[in-house]
Amino acid sequence: MTPTNSLLFLDLRSLNLEHRDAFHQALDRVMNSGQFIQGDELSSFEQEYAAYCGVDHCVGVGSGLDALHLTLRAWDIGPGDEVIVPSNTYIATWLAVSHSGATPVPVEPRLDTYNLDPELLDSAITSRTKAIIAVHLYGQPAHMDAIVAIARNRRVRVLEDAAQAHGACYKGSRVGSLGDAAGFSFYPSKNLGALGDAGAVTTNDKALAERLRSLRNYGSSRKHHNEERGFNSRLDEFQAALLRIKLKYLDGNNAIRSELAKKLIDGLRGTDAVLPEVPSWVQPAWHQFVVRHAMRDNLIKRLDDAGVQSMIHYPIPPHRQRAYSDTPLAQSCLPISEKIHKEVLSLPLNPLMSNRDIERILSAFQQREQGF
Ligand SMILES: *Cc1c(COP(=O)(O)O)cnc(C)c1O
Image (cartoon, rainbow, N blue to C red; front, side, top):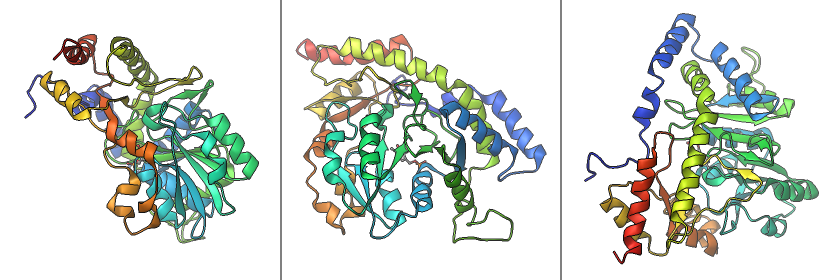
């Protein structure tokens, strides 16, 4: 049982109640407009989010999974094609490829950044490879210059999975602007979270944006005319209105995350935990603060005893999930990913936390240093 005074991993209730009055006004505005799907709130949010990411187009869709899946479809990627994915990511990255009909080809990450190892990419590309999905895992941008250079050289596309990295920067540019297109999720617990499901694609490619607008809407870009067999995957007016409010706080909240992360890194130096490595050219969004520990269960218990909730992102790698047990992917040899899945632990890190919460996390680690 969790004691009532424990440090919650993420308190979504409090996080959203901070905007209660603004939310109520926005919901009233939508109700009074009488437009609930594909109205002014969505087009305003799309413009605002495209500007925020520094791209020409943003297309709102129903979820992060749909953002990735529909982009692959819009690129006509399907059966017989291969798409490179990181071996350690949330399974949605792989599912997007599987739903398109193409085959996910896992490539191992670097153990220090947990992101795609560019040195392993070239040998994973075949004549069937159509795209690379680069995930900015835990909010830290992948090494995009190296990834894009290899992709250009081999004539494959780059799709960013930016579901965990809203607002993160790579060499001064925002994620969402670093490849040919990017998929975002606004799932409630993400750095920019709706109060339900939502997602978006950002891109500078006008033709891609237009195709996505059709694909999300039954394959129709003109009422009663269906150019292709599309989907129903739209970002509704209520969620768009709430996201417009929360977007204004994204940079401020990411800055708080960044300060807290710095305090955790400073305070945990010299302990038995392996700390996040941040290359000097990235500014992470700190979606998760992830440490690695050889005796993870022991660490979870120490944190538990101190009333600190922790979580594992993720306990089972995609190739070990039942979802892929009937495919050759189940036999993949991915030792780095497996090591990561056995050892990682996410500590609480969110904009509601105070210095006292940081102290509490640090003291749970210090108990071990004193012989525990
Ligand atoms: C959350 C997430 C997704 C999926 O987003 P949904 O909106 O839940 O569909 C995809 N990729 C990554 C890396 C994620 O963290």
